[in-house]
Length: 369
Figure (tube, one colour):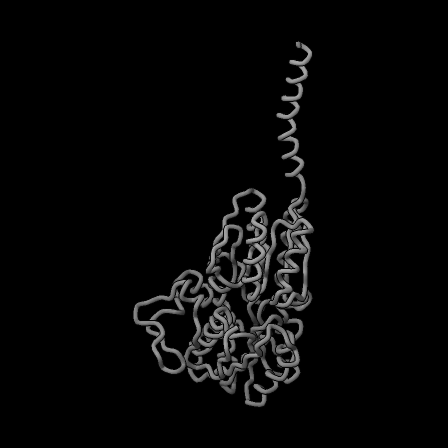
C-alpha cells in the first residue's frame, strides 16, 4: 500500500507538471496566419500594399508567426475553398483582404469557430464571434484623396480631370467625392469625369477608359483600382499628369506623377496579430481614424511646386485634426438633391452606406457591386 500511495502521488505530480509544459510547447509554436488576395501581390497596388504589410508583420513578430499567401482568388465560391485549405494547413488567423470576401468569410467562420477571420473593406452587418472587420469603408481613408484633389485642381489647364474607378461602392465613392471636393476647393471650374470599369483589375478596360477620357480633353488622370499602373503609364505616355492609389508608383511616371494615396498596413497587422497571440482579440468592426497612420500621401512629383505641396499637406493635417470636415451639411449631390441637412455631420455608419456623388462629377453610376 505505501508503494501504491507513492506511485499515485508521482502520477498526480507528473500530471500537474505536464500542464504548463504542454502549454509552453503550444505557446512556442508560431501562429499560422493566412492572407487571401484577389490579385497578384506584385501588382504595385492594393494586393501589393497588403503583402508589404504582411512582410512587415512577419519581420516584426519574427518567430511568433508563420504566414502564407493565396493570390488571385476571385470573389466567388473559390474563397471558401481556399480558406478551408488554409485551415486544414493549420492557419488560426486569416486575413481576407478583398471587398467581396465578406460573405464567404462568414460562412467559413461559422463552420470553424476556433479560427479568427479578419475581413478588410466592409463593416460586418451580421456579427459572428470569430469574425472582425477592418479597413476602408468605415474609416477616414479618403482624407489623402482630398489633398490629391487640391493638387490636381491647381495643375490642370483644361479644368477637366479624368477618374477611372472599379466599382461604385461606398469606399470608392467616398474617395471620388473627397478628391472632387479638394479639386473644387481651389478651382471651382473643375469637372471630374469618372468611368467605372466594373472590375477590380482589367488592364485592357482600364487603358480603354483612360484613352477615352484623354479624347475628351482631360489633362489629369486619377484612378482607384486594384492597381493604378495602367492608368498612370497611359497618362505618362500622353504627357499628362497622374494621381495614383494604394501604392506609390511615382517611378513609373517620372514627369507627370503628381501624388497619390498609399497604404501602410504593417503596423495594423502587427496590432491585430498581437491581440490574437495574447488572447485579447475581440470581434467587431475596427474603426480606423485619421491618426492611425495607415492611409498616407505618396511622394509629390516634380510638377508640384513647394507652395502647392505645403497647401496639400496642410489640408490633410486640418482633416486629421478635425479642423476641416468634408461631409457635413448642408451638402447636395450632383443632381441638386440635399443629401446632408444643415448642421449634420455624417457618421462612420452613414459614410459606410454612401451611394451618391457630389457636384462637379460627370459620368454614369452603374449598378453597385
